[in-house]
Amino acid sequence: MIEIRTPGDEDWKAVSRADYRNFGHVPSAEEENRERPIIDLGRYRMAVERGDVVGVAGSFGLQMTMPGGAAIPTAGVTWVSVSVTHRRRGLLRRLMDAVHRDVDERGEPLAALTASEGGIYERFGYGIASVRRVSSLDRRRAQLQERFRPDPGMVRLVDAGAALDDIAKVWDRFRTVRPGEIARSEAWHRVVMADHGPGQIHALHPDGYASWKIDAKWNDGHPAHELWLSTMAPVTSEAHAALWHTVLSTDLVGPIRSYSVPLDDPLPFLLTDQRALRTTDLNDCLWCNVRDVKGCFGARTYGADDDVVVEVDGARWRIGASGVSSVRTRPDLVTDGPGLGALLLGGVAPTTLAAGRRLEPRSADVLRRADALFLTHPGPYCQTGF
Image 1 (spheres, rainbow, N blue to C red):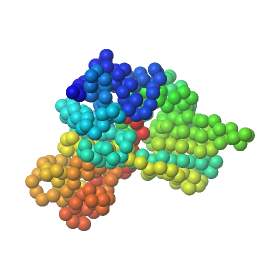
Image 2 (image 1 turned 120 degrees about the horizontal axis):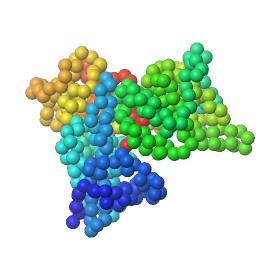
Image 3 (image 1 turned 90 degrees about the vertical axis):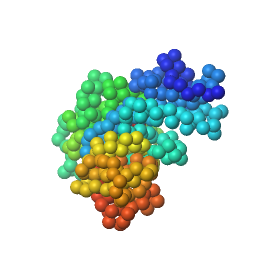
Image 4 (image 1 turned 30 degrees about the horizontal axis):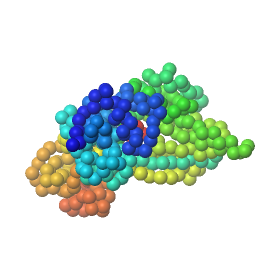
């Protein structure tokens, strides 16, 4: 008999080690306890058989930014794994159902996750709402055009511990301008910095923050160090240019690689050679499961003074600039839970969902109106792993 229950403090090590093992990693003692300050075990569920932890799932209590800048309570579903000895027994379904019940009891309107595998979560009601770009920038070819270079002295390198309050204030401003981004507590900032490892460089602008790490590659006297840009968080266009100018001024660097450059980032337009910035991979990022339609779609703004009626799994909702309400009128769009999740953050066009057979429009005109209504700029992007 496999029992699903909430772990206590005494279960922490067993839960942590089971999850690391299921993801193919043996943690050090430091790694094992790194995330403990941001984990509420009351939000987790573990599967136990004869005293052994054979499955885990849980969530973080997050605040995610919606289009327009408002943030809503979000369950960041995480640590979802089942032991290799217990596959194909329905255990994943039981764990996810238990986590979703907990989310609903807490009244959180949205559950979201980032998936280790792309073929798992649609059956649990999750739809892809944003993408993650892997970018590569050849610093030897890339400089800001002279007319865009900032005044000197706007960016300073800081000790992250001493400047944590200033970094946190800038981040809290930044995350409201990018749908899909997550609020970070002080403990969360510390965990993120620890995850990035020693040797991280932190750059602070009055209106922005960036961090990176350099992997030295001397190449027998032909240095081409690799710079991994882990955070790029500008609040203003001036901070954006100043932070990038700082990164691009780093000596001995060849490639600059990052997960932190969205597809709609204006960086290419500032460069002397736009082709220097390349997309080397593109993957799904945020998967959204709308638990409360009013709580989610009522918190975001829209691109047009319009409304459409969306039918989801038999329920009909009028969604748009006038708010969100349950209706019984003929639907303009028909979709399912994953389709609704894909629409939430404004990064997926209804036209694209219709072409992919995930949404059925009443007419071509309705589809055109829906694109204008749901799409947003800037598009959704999340640099915060969970």
